[in-house]
Image 1 (spheres, rainbow, N blue to C red):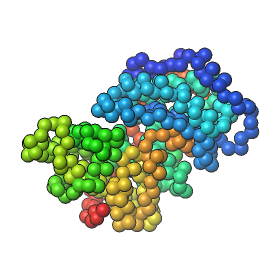
Image 2: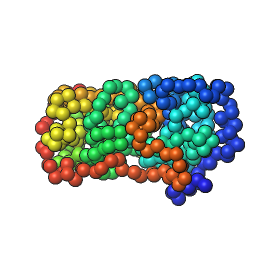
Image 3: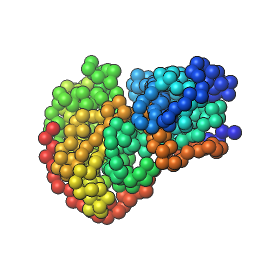
Length: 414
């Protein structure tokens, strides 16, 4: 019997017959000898249904993804029940497309890796249920994946990066700084105390009604802000970064969002327009919020670098900072981080933008990493659960705060 958390509500459980028919749809000859480990990765933690087949040398043999962005743009945000239904509608097709593109028979897979934490409960349930049925039919090992661990390790697929390294994960649902000491060995230095930066950008974009802007109507909130910011004056509004006096590595974005909302209300009154109409100063507001967010992210990351070097957790020269997650694909944020790494004799590495957002490749690669290290490979899947909320690694953020490291001012000439 499949046991899931009660928070899942009604979960998706494909019938054995459907899974059997799905597997029979592959015409490849089973039993082919493969010298490399091969993992199927499945990702449904939020609003993208994704799958990929990756081998241990880092070759992406096949991938497929179904984005729900267009649907959620119309509703003004992600509705969990809608996301769940869209995952249900698309997961079998997406997995089939990834396997077909790979030319790998399901019977030749070494393991199946699936995101089980953290994320939207209803979305995680769909991926886990489908995966466990597949694992049961194929009699393959199952590798549960922590979504943020997968983001952190993606860089080792695209670049030759040794442990330890510092990782900054910034997305629509997450924001954290961690020292990566091994495949599943993380020290958490700081995290968002409220919302994630991508969530804040989406909320500001909705408040600015950017979906009504002719240049932004098909863009997500974060992309719309980045696009408009290029046309705006980032110094038009004077706003201090959040947690200005807190000498730790934690983040906060709710306060910045509230300050921006007040500025928007003031400008609406000045321009004599109602909420729901696009302000003439929208580009300036977009530039301001993006710049302030980038400065905040850089300052916390700067402190993390200094802390790790003080404690000899990172090498003094040529330490690696990895920035990943959806917000890391923002080129303004990347440029700000480049200024930081140049000033601290570090190397900034970012996965390609398409691997910064949620995808099946990072899940499959995380499966390969764990398979090679012999970590978390399950042959008995009884009682496996998904976890909507799950911290990453050992939290030493209190120790970071107690160190109270002062951060020198950097010139953000972007």
